[in-house]
Structure formats: structure tokens, C-alpha cells
Length: 170
Image (cartoon, rainbow, N blue to C red; front, side, top):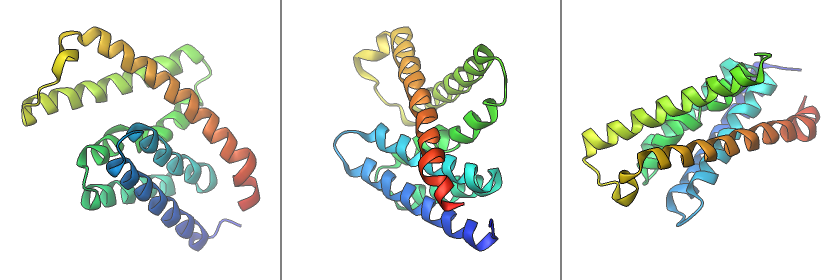
């Protein structure tokens, strides 16, 4: 039975777990992006159980808590700018029958957001991007390869959640 109180409870738990994972990402010396990616699974889980409105609420609460509470704001920005809502986008594009079109749409969103973040960081923060800034095409190719791995891992994570956990909760 999908009651609003049950959905609210699970949404709150997913948001709290996502915030804790982002906190761990902010204070740990390594594995930051892995924790950010794991935090995004809560949004997908809530979407599969209760629908996109509750998942959007999970994303919003986790993003606000991360931006307010985390000492490492970069982790909160990564989550808010892309990784937090990407599972919703991935589940939405899963409805497209053509696999190539799905992949192009996902890569287009990823590249658009990463380029916006790059230019925002360059203009507002005047950061020095080091030696990799001399090879932007190589960096972009590496980021796209990492994104495709994340997309496959997210798909498998959602499948695992739905097959092993969600059916026990419903």
C-alpha cells in the first residue's frame, strides 16, 4: 500500500542517507565521486517505489541539506548540478526504444552540465586547472568514458534495488 506517510518516511530516509553519503564524500580523502554516485541511488529508489514527485522531493531535500551543511561545497555542487537528478533523467530516457538515441541524450546532458560547470568555475572562481587544462579534448573524452561507466553502474544499481529490495518493501 502506497500511503503518503509511507512515501514521506522513505523519502526522508533516502534524503538523510544521501546527505550522509555526501558528507562522507566531503571529508574522505578519496572516493568522492563514488559516494556522490551512491547518494544518487536514493533518488532512483524513491522514483521506482513512489513516483517522480517523491523522487524530486528527495533530490531537493538532499541538495538543500548538502548545500547548507557540507563543509565541502564542491561535492554538494556536483550532486545538485548533475548527479542528484540524473537518475530521474535516466529512468525517463529509458522509455525511449532506440538505445543510440538514449545514449546520445544522456551524453548531451552530461556534456552540457559539465561544460557549464567548467565555464562557471573559470569565470567566477578563477581556478587554475593545472596541466590537464592544456588537453581539454583528452579530459572531455576521459570524463565521457567515466560517465558511461557511471551510467552502466547506475542501471545495474537500480536493477538490483528493484529486484532485491523494492519488492520486499511494497
